[in-house]
Length: 123
Image 1 (cartoon, rainbow, N blue to C red):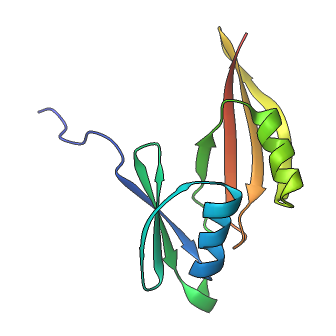
Image 2 (cartoon, rainbow, N blue to C red):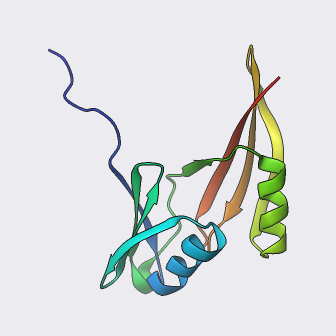
């Protein structure tokens, strides 16, 4: 039997303050804002919807991570520094593949969630 699952439609990130997180994802990360409802906000991430789910005071950063793709991790790193984003780990090569190097850095969003930023840099 063939799977009827064809991809990821939506990913949810729990946040303490939806308004603050919406500003971070829209203005700092520059993701395309789609729509909002009370205690919810939605963004487009290259065809996958990112759902910010308000958890209020009970929010604790999750053990699940979202990794964003960038074409230029060095430029992204500079932009984040200019915008005072909390850099958890600076860009570094984490794997040398046959035709490219895999780069990763970690940042924290406005709610303390860790976000991976990755580049597949061709050699």
